[in-house]
Amino acid sequence: MKNFIIPVERLISAFSRLPGVGRKTATRYAYYCINMSNEDAQSFADAILDAKEKVKYCTICGNFTDKDICNTCLRGDRKLVCVVAEPKDVLALEKVSDFNGTYHVLHGLLNPLEGKTANDIRIKELLERINKDKVQEVIMATNPTVEGEATAIYISNLLKPLGVKVTRIAQGVSLGTDIEYVDEVTLSRAIEDRREL
Amino acid sequence: MKNFIIPVERLISAFSRLPGVGRKTATRYAYYCINMSNEDAQSFADAILDAKEKVKYCTICGNFTDKDICNTCLRGDRKLVCVVAEPKDVLALEKVSDFNGTYHVLHGLLNPLEGKTANDIRIKELLERINKDKVQEVIMATNPTVEGEATAIYISNLLKPLGVKVTRIAQGVSLGTDIEYVDEVTLSRAIEDRREL
Image 1 (spheres, chains in turn brown, blue):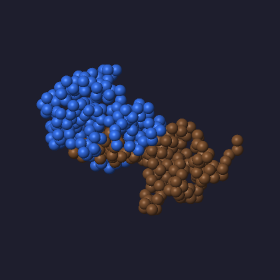
Image 2 (image 1 turned 90 degrees about the horizontal axis):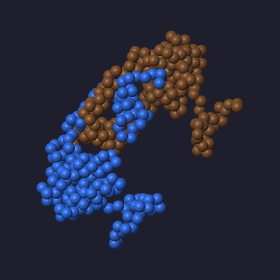
Image 3 (image 1 turned 120 degrees about the vertical axis):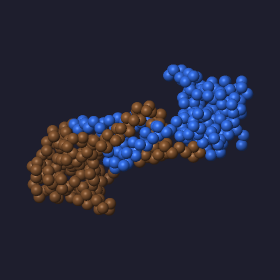
Image 4 (image 1 turned 30 degrees about the horizontal axis):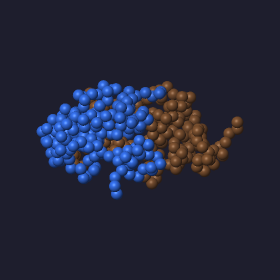
């Protein structure tokens, strides 16, 4: 590079840290930022600091919120808890409008290889909610991966003795997929969990 | 959205303004930022403001620089000028290591439909350089689009009477493409501009 400019390089490397952003995309973002008006750049920087400063975790469910308790916990049915790994999973589930329960964000999944044990994720907080709110059903909505499955089974084993109904989101073929291309494990689950029409 | 958080929404909308970023990607970036350490978030915000503040346009070529005159203009051959539309084009061309000339960034292309005329892009500055630096050759490296071609022809008509050699980057098939899928205009140019082996 003949024309190495330190502030530009610094901005490119800042953007490169975002998930899924390589150097080329980061450069595109950086050049766009430099061409912004001063007000827009200031407001962008402020938005980052403001979000970082004001957004905290809901003391009940662990999802992002700017209050102590998030709106979902305030309004939703606390006897029905949907357990997810990360705040972004809540975002996806919130689009399902007919769910009126609350969430519980674990902030991770059990992963012994990476040293994540039951104490590193919010399982203790979930157990506290079970007693306090007299939870009737816990829906395990962790990803259908090795870690997600293991975490779901682990939590289910903890909760069942407490008399809580523990369910797992259904696994099967997605809407619009081509049966031909569905992997055999998914297909086998879809057949196993078939339902009457 | 049951759980609308203003600072998060503001950050998502800031990221949405980046080129090619939709709401879903912006949300991913925003959630990543909120999970950053305070230092990283501060350094990200600083990088934006710092780049915006320190990066300006080179007084000669119009490319980004943090000095008055960019390194390329200081070291390159000023008698050979490569004309491009945007600073990002310079970035692509700088990877071509055997070019030792200088650049001239127009900051736009002629586009009568969008009201971009010759006075809105840096053509006057190019003409000044022609006289001042006794430029011998101008390479037109604008995009091979309607606007890029029109701008190249317009500038070429201005410069030829001044005795400057004006060239255009070659158009033809790209390395690795499949002739079968090349559009007919490109193929026709490639045949027209064929060279002896």
